[in-house]
Length: 201
Image 1 (cartoon, rainbow, N blue to C red):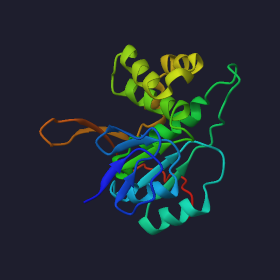
Image 2: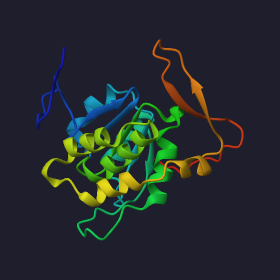
Image 3: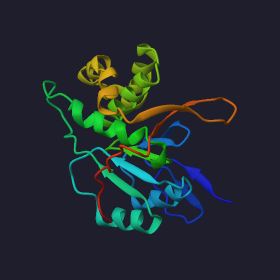
């Protein structure tokens, strides 16, 4: 039996969650940067993929963990911004969304450094794709960003054009899965699919 906690514990019987960890929906998780003490917990998620939203190289120790667990790393280098005039790159978020909504990459973990701004922008754009009302999208973003909520991020999410996603993802089809709730999932058609760039482990 293991105890799951938020904190800095090294006990083998304790599973330590990454900072700002949460489930976005079935098969999609978000967090801050995973540390070695979080690896035990990450194993329980049976991840297939990680979407990493920072430009810095992934630590060697983390790469070894991903290789041992057969987890693919998709890196989208978005600079951490403090200048309010610097905007999130729309094309990069669009490319990350393309990976995120492909269920073949699930279960997937999205993370940046602290799991607040860059991760919040990507999840916010996903919520727009899921037809969430904007007030609920903002509430979720602010829950994770806390006092460091950025109006530029909220503006980016508000103005992000989901319609343009269809132009980039013409090979995506809507398909209903079972599971009782008949949740709408987005799947790539096997034909016409270009292989995404991944980091070699």
